[in-house]
Image (tube, rainbow, N blue to C red; front, side, top):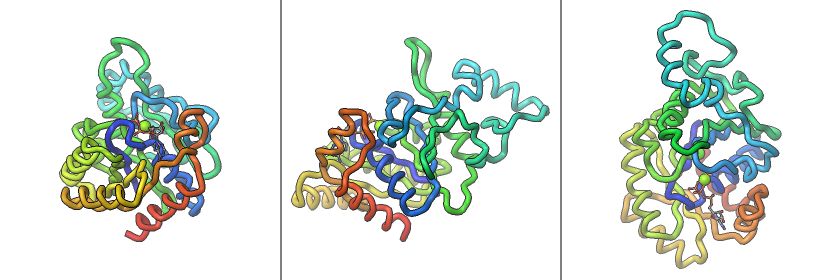
Length: 262
Ligand SMILES: Nc1ncnc2c1ncn2[C@@H]1O[C@H](COP(=O)(O)OP(=O)(O)OP(=O)(O)O)[C@@H](O)[C@H]1O
Ligand SMILES: [Mg+2]
């Protein structure tokens, strides 16, 4: 199963990815987290990992080289190395070079690439690489990929979702977030995604949860679960620690049960 986690900037996508990854590992799954956000670089901390992996972009020679490499590799018949995102028909998790993953137990993190320099150009090459990588990624039984998307909806325009089974759109209590979720549902359906769920985050009361559910309902979306506003999550994000907390763990556990049941 490939799950993408998307939503408005700051809604809690990376937090949800970290909670979800941990919960699925506890269920015995081998979880590959794909960091497809070209801006933020701290997902490894939220996952409780010690360092960020070398970006997949480096494997193809860096962003500037990507276009040239794509042209030459597609026209060359020469055999490639162990994993080549551009030429391999399929990529197994175990074939991803070790330096391009950070890992802890059953959890693996790969990072597509980050914008690092001024005037280095747009993030479209990261989108191309994310799409190719996800399209070719071959998951064994017991493996689940979770993609931490960049904020907003540009990734739909780039086609990153075309090989995703389930989209989770994280919704925080704001009109912008609700409106974006409705757009995500429409775009995900157009990209051929079979299921799209909203996941409410930063909820502060039962009344608010009920209101948000009604708002989602009006937009044709169903909430698969609720994560409340937790001081320990806020604290972990502030201090750069692993995202955790007993109640949040229970809440994401219910989300996982729903996801697996459906
Ligand atoms: N359930 C929660 N309880 C308390 N604080 C939260 C919760 N979820 C997220 N936050 C706060 O919101 C901030 C943004 O969360 P996060 O980085 O997960 O969002 P994001 O959607 O991934 O952001 P970006 O769009 O920048 O990638 C965190 O730094 C944290 O302070
Ligand atoms: Mg994020």
